[in-house]
View 1 (cartoon, rainbow, N blue to C red):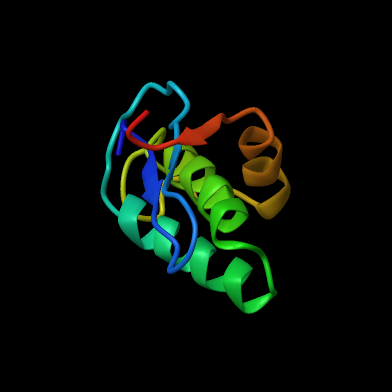
View 2 (view 1 turned 90 degrees about the horizontal axis):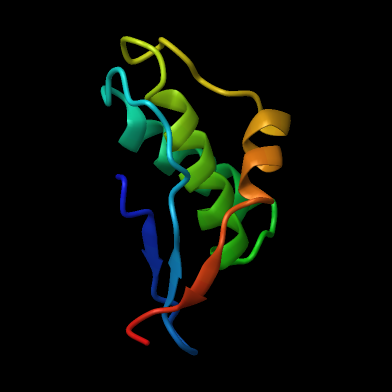
Length: 92
């Protein structure tokens, strides 16, 4: 959601990945977009934090159009937005 994601690995500190500011039109399917992106990136060997950053970006982009299939961003678009997102230790 608009708060981003909290990454809590089995070992190591928790990290908060901030969500980008977008004009949300319809949140239908945003969670599916996040989970699908996360699953693909983890299967490809990305770290949990890196996968979460791109997943937050993809989900943010997906809410900018109506309907569950309104806007499913391409990988390049999600990765480009993710590169601009901040991640910081949680709780601090």
